[in-house]
Amino acid sequence: VRIEQKAGDGSIMASRSEEITELLDVFSKSQYRAREVTPSVERIEERCLELFDRDYKYSIIHNTNGEVCGHYPRKIVFLEYESSDNNKESFESTVQISKLQDLVNRSKMARCRGRFVCPVILYNGKHVCRSSTLAGWGELYGRTGYNYIFSGGSDDTFGDAEEVPEDDCAVRNNDSQLFDKVRGSDIKLLKYLSVCYICDLMVENKKVKFGLNVTSSEKVDKAHRYADFTLLSVPYPGVDLLNDYVDAPLTIPDFFTRNLNIKWSEYQSWDLVQQTQNYLKLLLHIINSDDENGLLVHCISGWDRTPLFVSLLRLSLWADRAIHASLEPSEILYLTIAYDWFLFGLIFFFCFNFLKHIVCDTFSVIKKQRCTFVPDRQVRLEAVRELFLAAYSSTVGLKSSSPSSSGAISGLLEQFARGVGLRGTNAII
Image (tube, rainbow, N blue to C red; front, side):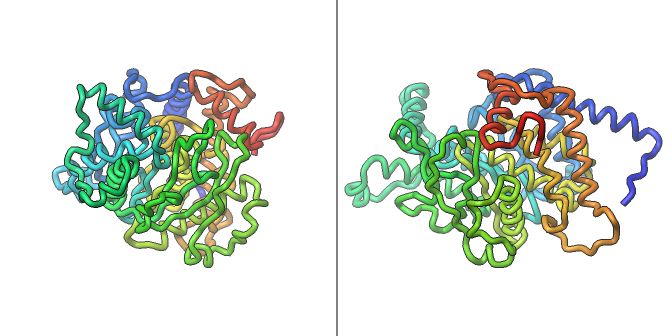
């Protein structure tokens, strides 16, 4: 595969490289918050919309000033279908966007930190979504009380939610009624998005701090509210891996494991590279084996492991020309850094450096014969990785730094890297 450079390409590539460098520079100095948007962040938001618009018709889920979630983009893109047609007048929505907005508003309290189920990738008509895990009773009661006080004594989040029958109310306590309402709204949103598969990256069944269950997960919902979904427990280390408490076993339905030629029983002996590769193969297999149903990926807070796999899915599918077909390497890199990481709260060095481990055709959703010495997929992913490393080196740098209390990326990256052994003093995986 040869990449020919035309006249003028050099200046365009330099401009796009500078664009990525500026993005990382903004990112390295501050964490995104929907209520505190600067002109430079507004430009990043608009650039993301331009890149989505290149290949898709989309609607907007409004999150003005972070009213729904303070760590989600102000304009959340809901991809409706692929289209390169620039005539927007022919656009017909595939959903009732007002209903989707209402479901989002009602379900926001169901999950930790308000990080509701959010569609981020569209592949063959199916949505790949991201979120945090389910909120526990402590967070639910804290937030419902806060909303009640600051809404003047009323909270209409569940104003016209389905009523629980009186005979049931007599035997169920207040906790159960509250969980019925918020998780019921969460389930309605999942079903409206045609999500059938839920991939849980948590290493715990529930997150416990100071002896209290601060978060939960679908797999341990006592009322089995998520019984209609296919639940996968795929424990993966996060930034808090220094906590060695792991009680979530690897749980994957047989119909997904039998065709992947992976020895899942040996998962506890895998290093992080092998674990990431095998989990990515699993996610690609899931979205490629069902023609109708989508996928939700989440960890605890939805801001380290979740965007890692969302980004790898987006980049892997792009390398196969299965999504974002018109975007160049610099453009898909910009979109992935900005939308998958920055506008959702964090960035992750490991993700982009890891691209060298998924260049082979075993990660491809397109079965093709080798016609060339260097597959097109490998060329595309290596181009993205090289662009990222160049921009990262000139902004954040590859030297160790102490964790930052501001939430900026330098300290968080180093904290994660040291926690899971990604970075040594002289080497990068």
